[in-house]
Image (cartoon, rainbow, N blue to C red; front, side, top):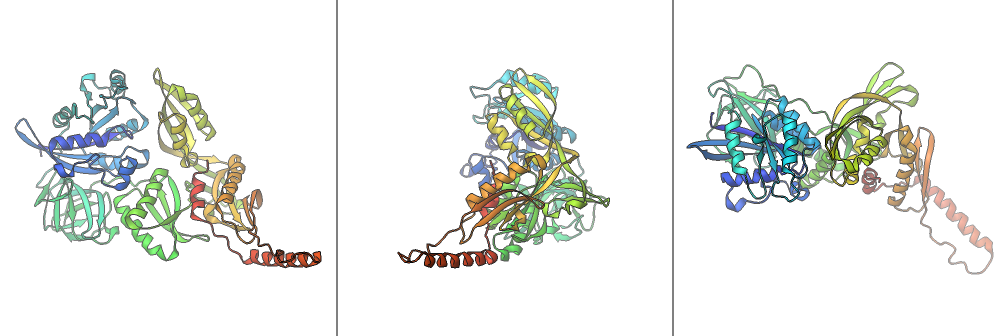
Length: 595
């Protein structure tokens, strides 16, 4: 056990975590020449296309140092705020962390929040300054920022270039010298924590675990403590680039287990694996349950695919534990699921993964957050969906979730960033100048205001400099109203949204204009209305497609033409009563990208 090191790499998005992991894999020859490629651990197509890490990836590396053979278990983590749950799970299964900071950009918001997460778990932090080969690298200035943040000595900071490989060997030596070896007793009863799992259509469910005590051998009879189910360990092994079978995995190590489990509900991230004949006395304290921030309805395009969608969500949840879902139905879209996500990027990724991995085409409704509604009868309701609101006369007041937002930006874009936050109903709590040209802003804002397009706007107005991080701090009373969209007098519940009264009029107006562009013309006029309760606040009309019924009348009496037009008018009226307006899928998506 003294020769094992478990560590993860944490940093802000795009600071070079995956590239640093690549260089370490090259140095330790953990991947053969044929399989080598950039971002070798990002095995999802989506990750390569977007250039971001979505899943934490574990890999085992071997390294000889001072005549000893060491085993290094590395977990590469995502950097985006929407995938912070992945980071928290990686941190919980390690003893140390490499904190990577980009020498051209300095410390950013996510760097700080990931660092606090690591310090809570008492991890040994090794600061790494990356991208020192760039012309715009500010090595001394950023080193001072790291010293101020961590309180470490300047010589403890390792300067590297993950792209060229300069200084990466020193990082590996620092890991071996500074990060403590894992604790545990290989002879005690087995106690292993499941930190991830994945569905394989041929082998069933593969669970990834970290052994804290005891030893697991191939063929052992094991059970999952929370679900109480017992299985045979058909195959266990180490997580190299591919799964590598081994006869046993002992305390302090990381591995995988295949035991022919078919039902996804039987494996839960955070569960404990132990032996059936010699169980451990208590389960390991698992990870805290994740709190979704954003809710949206996910519906199959065709109603017959409801069961397929349920199966796909179950399998996806194995691999993405931060996804939550429960069944719901909508008048416009039929049966579907109310899903909870950690943010808008998370929603987009889940939708894309459903399509690519499970061939599920889905419609996603307007995302919103959960509110607490206090009624005049003294009840408190938690509402995730505008259609779940009680009648207006029964509502006493509504509380909405509030966040503490931390934004780090350069001084040039300070004014526009403050204006953006104030427009989003934010309150400036304080501002601190970290250096002469970098400032940290702390705001209190409603979560619903950042759900839509806040992050994109922040990036564009600050030309990509501003970084953003947030956490939930509680609930605050707000003047909210339900905005309904009516097509031909019929409510489309999937387009309803809860919105602050001051913004309802302009939002309703923009929504009607957008829908007018997207709804195809019918044989009759289609009225698109935005309403608050019974009051219509905006209206647009999609004009009818008309056939020229008077074309055959040339000359003759005007009454002949009038008779034909009256007949057409009656037909249109009858058609409007029985006509049904189909809302195209683009309309649901366009509402998300209103601006």
